[in-house]
Image (cartoon, rainbow, N blue to C red; front, side, top):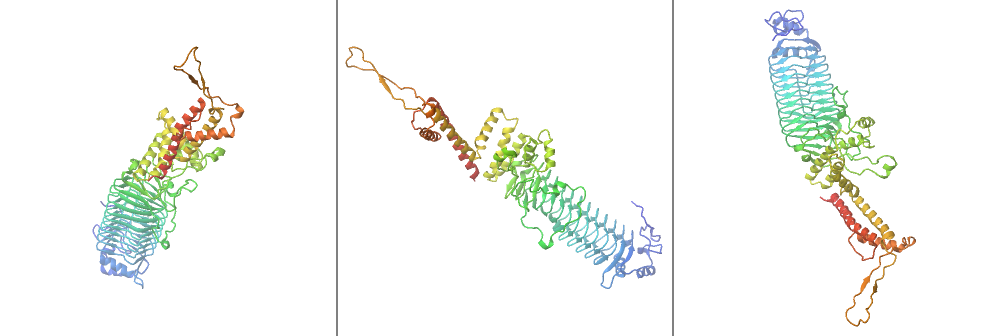
Length: 613
């Protein structure tokens, strides 16, 4: 299909679309030898050149570049236009210096396009270029923006060691063979959105001063990404049909709806990573990297402003005042697992204090290994009462922080704007039943990894929200709250011991005041012999007078309190001292004998749950 061009086309060659050389009716390809020699003689280092639409052979290109070489052997061009030009042979622009803008828009390289060591001072426009063979840009240097959008490279693309001082745009590009960006350095932003990589792809030791976008990119071959970026790395909606290794040190990583049918090994550092809706179907790991991915002397500089459309919640990590965790600065922060099937996913050394788990599937199969950090409750409940009665120390999820803020509890969320938003919600987004399910799944995940003490925190959360769930029957809810109050669901030994101490104290007081008689009653035997009786059997009845309490002023003596305390201590371990008691004291001891061992057992159970392997 013919398209309209913006220049005067060659009048010599039939159907030729090449631009006319200055002062002639023909393009460079159709100039007669004498006219071509005259044109080449007019060129010198730094001259502008316009060969738009021209068919350029290898011989013609060599002659053009020879006419532009300086004393150091570099071909030096000013502004150059090869828009929609066609290069018949293998093309070599190696060691060429483009002082001005270079337009190769829509150009067609039938074989190899060689730009190894080329230096571009102005814009480098390669959008829509088609290369039949390999494209060589190893060691090329781009001082201004480089545009490779919609470029189609049939062979291998070599950008090893290329340096881009500004933006590099490869959106919609198609790489038919291998794509090598090993050691490439892009000082600002890189756009690879919608690009297709048919062969092996290597971004090993690639550095980005700004952000790198790979949204909707397709990596059909084996891939390896080892990227350091000052901004965000966007891999949302990207597809990796083959197993892939991804190592990234960045401010944020967007993996929403990314597809990993064969699995992925993610090694991240510093980044806030969003996995919402990611499709993970093969064995996959997400780990934190302690060591830097680039050397100190090669630290990535800060890039320019982040392009529009990037998620600000990924680029801003949670502040220390927002999350009270023991997480390390190098740890990647997972912000969402919503919509992720966790069957094949393992997390190792990551910060989960801001992670949203609601909506994750098969959460019980999630692997939690290493030092996975969760959020903690605030230290104070607020107010004078809160300073005396604090929240139980345990690991919590972000959904509980939001749930409690919505219910009016203070201190769980520090951001005042977020607090205002949550307190204005009529009911929590995640119900108590859903919260119990979340904690149940996390508990089972840790139990599968034989981390019983770690699972105890999630068991506490599970039981707490079971007690709060509207679907829980009232009788069961009462039992759960009693279980919580006396022993923290069998996880708080001090609470059970405190209840035991209160039981002993109450029993002591009751016994001293109403359980111990004032004086042990004496047995009395009374019988009367019938008149005239002699010998034979005599039947006697032995009466025991009821125990009587002493006067009120005599009940609280030291001896009585000591005796009551000994009886109370013995009662909680099923000991019976045989002491005479009043009816009230006897029933008090019965209650203590039942309740005391239960509280002791709960204390032992709590210790066991915290120390068992």
